[in-house]
Amino acid sequence: MSRDNETEDYINAIRKTKLDQTATNTKTSLVQARDRGTQTAKDMERIMSEVKYTDDYTKAQEEKERAKDLTESVKINNANWVSGIRNESDNFVGGDYDVASRGEYNAFGTMLEVDSDEAEASTNSAYGLTNDMYGAKGSGKGEVSTQSYFNLTLPKNSVSTSRQAGATTKAMKQKVIDLIINTGYQAGMTDIEVATTLAIAAHESGFNPEASARESSASGVGQFVNKTGADYGLTDSNRWDLNMQVQALVDHTKDNFIIVENKGLSQDYVYALHHDGQTVVSKQGYSKTSAPGLKTSRKKVTPLISKYLTFIRSR
Image 1 (spheres, rainbow, N blue to C red):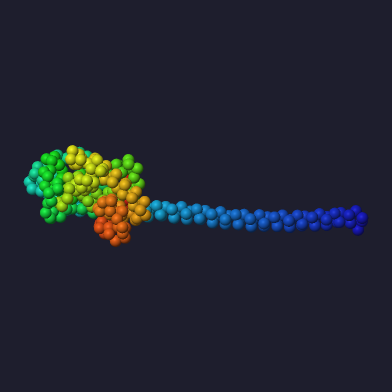
Image 2 (image 1 turned 90 degrees about the horizontal axis):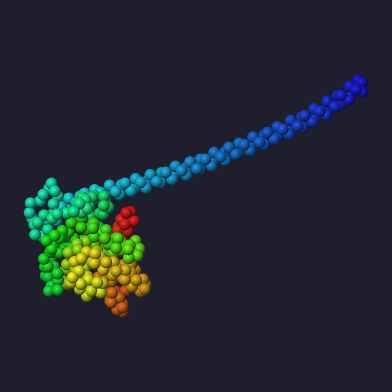
């Protein structure tokens, strides 16, 4: 073999070695790139799956909440429909009931003219209250004391059928409820304070502005006796003014919240003070055993607060 051929073979061998090494390096790089690409693809697939799961889960939760709200709405509407039928029967007082006009009668047997807003409210099953949230109804029993307004003749244009608690139209009750909410917020009340004020009015008067106690001078939406009413602006001339009644109740309840907070008492005592009087809180042992209104508060008033709280927050 000539030297030239040896040189060429040597060069070719070197070239082959370098090509083999380059090919090996290239193959290694390609494999690494493939592996990285595969891992990236897997990561992307996992991330997209998590995103899709999160999206599906969120949508499922939203649908669940909508279904829950719809169910509650149906329950409330059905309850209002049934209670409306019962109220129509319970509150009817004498006269020929005009089914076509759905007329209401006062204690004189006169059919009342109801304005369009009240007529709409009285038939609006979507207002959002369950039957118990329309307030208490008076029993109509017991002797009437000399200081009571119970036997005071109702105004001829009154929509109330008597001075018993709850003896008024559903439209009027809704009007009172709306007024309490608006007045409360205008006075700077919190949601819980407004809800508590509604619960107090529901228990005390059943939202009947003409309500009067048999055994005392308590009257109106908040059932204030003369002395307490006078402290909050109620007089003989404005005692039956709905706006004044509601303002007095809101102001009184705000003061009771302040007293309860300052004394370190639970919120059950807000109504207890309404029932027993603000001055009794200074009596020794009041907060422990001698709060007559506390039992009523926990049994009949406090259970309504959470319901009104849900109601006002949904408006």
